[in-house]
Length: 417
Image 1 (spheres, rainbow, N blue to C red):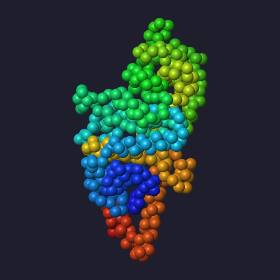
Image 2 (image 1 turned 60 degrees about the vertical axis):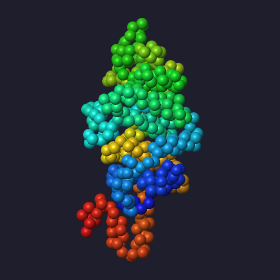
Image 3 (image 1 turned 180 degrees about the vertical axis):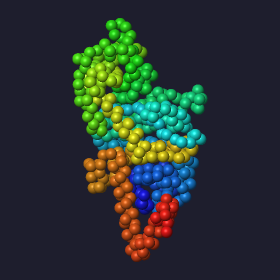
Image 4 (image 1 turned 30 degrees about the vertical axis):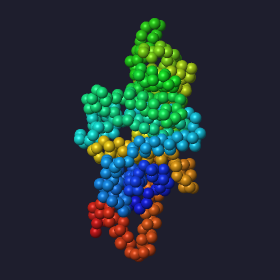
């Protein structure tokens, strides 16, 4: 990657809001680290640091993340303000709160907080951090709210242990305290449990959860598992529906719905769906406390949780969620906090000017926005090179200045001669 001579303008514009959190030198590291998360190919501390043309030693950025005295909670509160400002600016009255968890894969066993967790995609255990996260999903945008690190009881001890369900409740309470206007909570089957359902009832919130096939419902006075109940249905019971996911992809499903009494939950509305044709393949089950909703609305509501999956993909592929090589949990937590901020800034389009108005209208993916930020980096470098060439009239001299502190370029034999 070309040396970075100036941080992108949309990051420059937000720096005054964080000046009370950081000292002058910390604010520089803050701006550079945010920039690196968005545009650097190598998103480790060293990789980000080396990209800047006039950088300090990488240990300074490492200290910024692991031992500097800035307040993480203040950073999170300022990010919450940005989120609420965007909600107000877009006049968003309601949305969904999605709860989910993901693995941030690691290779070193000595990294604080890592453990072996089952990876459902790889279908085997993997060394990773496990994060429970919350996401606000409105009709035209979605924003990550916050995260919690899940650690097994054998590591935390019984007194400090918090299950993923406990962490989910914390995140829902936090969204309430931030006054996020969600009217329904959506999550996969792991979070469909009495603890979560009872808590949502206590705060009068609606919910739509995926359900496991072994949940029991009462049919003519007898308890029956959902996967047994579906066998009593005929193909004529199912209605074909065409749905649109949040990413625009069309999904055809064959669905059946009925209000039933569910064991330990009470009366709920159950939706049973097949993708290809009725009673062929494995069905998926949705359950909601909104018994008056038609099944089209229930299915559409659950599909609105899809952006939390795209957030995980973007965070890993474009913003370096899994690239952090620090071993201390303090640095890792701050890496995550800054990543959440970077994603929030890219989504809320805080910057002003004709270029960013064009971006808002034409560039919708996080990858595309990262590329546009990289384009601004290129533009700044061209201006820098031109100014220095005007002074020296020696292209080789300008080139040497550009790579003088970039170890990655200096080690490349194409540039070292």
